Length: 256
Length: 327
Image 1 (cartoon, rainbow over the protein chains, first blue to last red):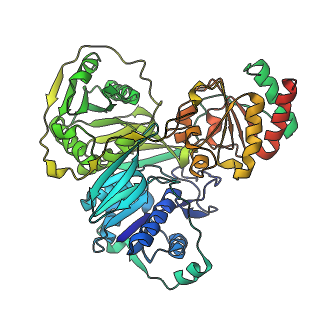
Image 2 (cartoon, rainbow over the protein chains, first blue to last red):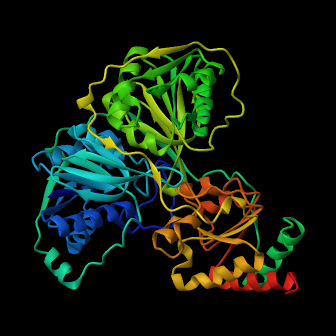
């Protein structure tokens, strides 16, 4: 089974974010980056499927040079090779533009399965995978908890809302977006890290791909959300703050 | 290209509550732009859902019906709605941001060379167009977007972002629209939806909930949280990552994929407040947040907050609660 995993590099969780001087995006200078968490689960699922059924896992990433680090980590965890679409202009593209680039880069790969995370931790649009499936003309399913591969088809467990689930069967090739937390993520082994250095990374310049269509939506401004509620911040040492909070719970909230 | 089309969602013969919030957003766009408002519902036998639709103030209602639309599939829904949108040529198509919409709406928008502006928390008229507001970085930042494409503008709205109570009553004609769908065009074969083991904990009835998130770092720190919950006489709950790790059973999860709660007191410990969590608890009467990051989105909905190290604050709080209760 040949599996492509589309991964994205995002600022590390809990980064302190500052809006840049243009007001269009965040200041990226002091940020560290990591694999988008849901994509890490997509990679894990791909590696487990390969362990069960054999085949190949190919990591696919679009982004600037700093993406190489995230690719190396995917290779160290067990991906066989990688495709890096090198580009600095992701912010000027919309989901359709980015998905078109991904589709063009894997046009000759003919994978059985494409996996990606259900959404990104930065933009959170949650649709690159679904749009990619449409561009490739293959079926898809989203927010997947389990994958069972069969002969030319797969059966997946989809998460619905409010604790409901559903099994869905579909023919291969197909695309799945994977839910976070469905398994335990592996760490790269020392051997894996060593091996990663010898693995193939195909670098494609965005200029060598068909030009992306003009964006149909534009991000005009980022800003801190207005507070909906007035939060009373309770100051002091832990002990003082705890005592003050208990007063509030007793006399204002009346739950003690 | 003119008009606003709202696509409603239903399950088990009833409309999803978020459908009406999407309709409220659609009404806002229609009123601000002076365009007619239509509504579509997709399925196989929609007679029972028709009446409620007819009682809303709309310009037109559509029952998009086909035997192959009985069970949801992305292929079926995309094909049916693509045909309806080609016929109506609306300027705006509005959805509730449900898991089902997330599954098919991006694909539908792609058919029209557009992208879905997903999970809106607000919108406002600005000049001849609209500014659409959505959240970035799991609620830490807001962003203003504008649709600049030449096709219809596809948007989905976040749960609770628009008020369904203000919908006006009316008398609307509901028309049946029969799309052409071939059985072999539907590639996914869905089984019946199911629930896993029956829930034994009903968090929705608990008056006090102490809820823990990633901030507690390790499973070994759970007893400290249990002690606080016990001192307060409350139930222990958690955000998704804690249950994914198996530290607490799934039935104690609060959020879009877990339970929805509205206790008198919701004490969030080490929970950053991603939207998936907030939708499950923002109906709480009083919210207290303890978090080391003063910019954590949980403080957006908190009445009281302590910015600090939870490993110091929680034991102090447990002790103070015990003292106040005279235990």
